[in-house]
Image 1: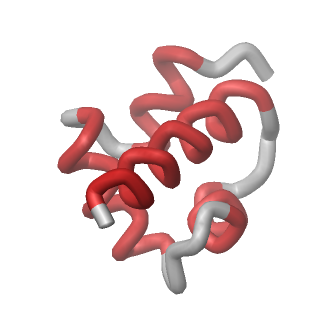
Image 2: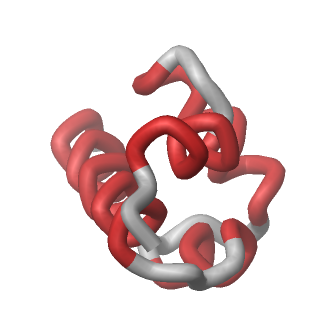
Length: 60
């Protein structure tokens, strides 16, 4: 379970940086049922929200 969660966040981080997909779509693409649950999990791993992460690391 921990591996899967880590993998999902890693994949989501790549998508946030390299695509202009919405956060909601990214949440679904990496296996979360909604953006709220995804955002909470993302924040737990990265200490920032997905949108903050995209602002700091995004290239698109």
